[in-house]
Length: 208
Image 1 (cartoon, one colour):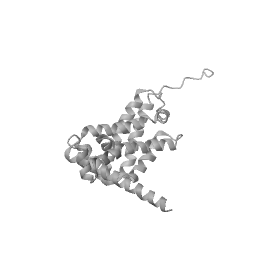
Image 2 (tube, rainbow, N blue to C red):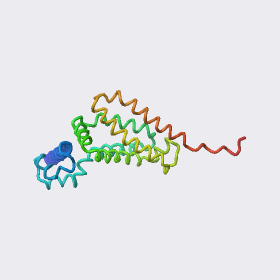
Image 3 (cartoon, rainbow, N blue to C red):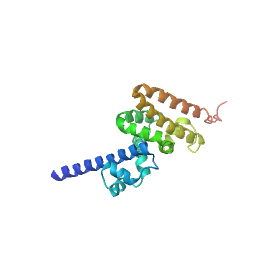
Image 4 (tube, helix red, strand yellow):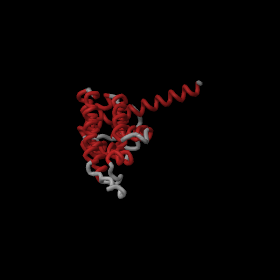
């Protein structure tokens, strides 16, 4: 029992250290810019050694995109947990969970960092777009188009960018429940538009 308690304590300590490094890095990226911040700067702000920063995050890029990566990973996890569910239903479930999972302070740091570093924001949106792309079978079922259809890339990019804006809007207005239905309505309109381009099923040759 003592061993389990010791392991749990070490895990919590590692998690706190990782979070301190991440938040220090994001704060500095917002204040000084991504290019103007070094690993040594982040280490000093987090009160750890530069080597410790590298143990938790191999590069500055990993720190900057850690939040979008985790958001995208949770989206992928929801799809894997519900393989037979519809694309929009899963996105709806995932987004509802994100409202509870995201720390407002962390989201505020993310927003400030993105505003100061537009290139990072583009990369963050692309991470979400990639997560949407990996849900190809569910998206194809929703649109009626082949998985390789270019419209799916369009939807993935649109959803990735829209989600980035959505999280920012939720942060600024602190009213996720009010934004959620409208956001889902926009996604449904996007998928419905793509569905209009799906080929009609061929007529049954045995019917007239």
